[in-house]
Length: 416
Image (cartoon, rainbow, N blue to C red; front, side, top):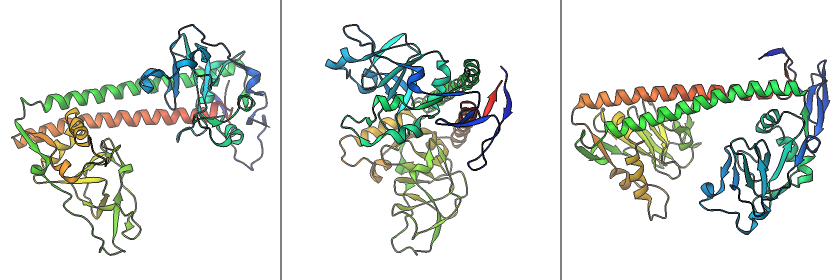
């Protein structure tokens, strides 16, 4: 595959470089065409009728999903015969907005020979061009700016954006020579393969850790089943309302913690500036455990010297009575056993959170031998290090692909 031959960079106000043109689709190479979507797309009108197809919906950020699996039941009902039939390579635009996809999302059917989707979706086929190039273009969010200007503000009663099919198909898209489309799509497809491999590796490493947790903390190996209140002081230090307004500290909220890692703030804030929920002090070797649904898996082990650190009251702060307790218990928080205990305590409650007594009664297994405690913690920490490395590699490749999409799909960087 020939790679980048020339790179053109510019910013607004710099003028347009030689070999480029200003179009309705933005600045693109002079040898590229720009067309309305309706000029390269054929709107699909085939109805499901009495023929039986798998019914699909579109999940933002995921793509096509089985309707029954997503919603727990078939939603097509009497409307099924009006569903639109898609074949491999066809596209569908879900006009449902979400936080991550406020202008809706477009996906291409790749994993099925045929399927049926709701008629409220805009479904179409790309003709005379390389569909893989346009799949990447749509995934990049290229149409978002144009769609935003065409959407009648507000959401309809059915939860869809106020956007007509006529307006959707009037959007402009770049049309490079087909050979260049194919090369661009090929480069981005290679990125997708690497990302898929990294994602699969991450799943395998997470599965390996779950297996380790089940084996290392099996009942036959660890006879001491203990409640957390036997091992930890819970929420021992709390800031009072009489705290000086100018008292400064590093503040951690639930959004800063994810699957065992903590995003440490760079700067301190004063008690006066802090949210009302800034109350729990924590220190080195403590465990932060989120008690608020839906963040019940936000845990963090404080492995740094924490001078003047305060956490949200959405956390329970566990301070160990013996230092070896923290790393062993921290890893057990991610086990299926602990997840079951969390859910049992939430059943029937009107308040979607665990209280202090709920946390205190959670049960974990602790080895009787201190050295065994330390060895188990070391083993699981090594696995965590592998998981973190794979997560970082996956993140790097996702960012690489995003950068390449911005450069290749609109001709800022040319592939000759």
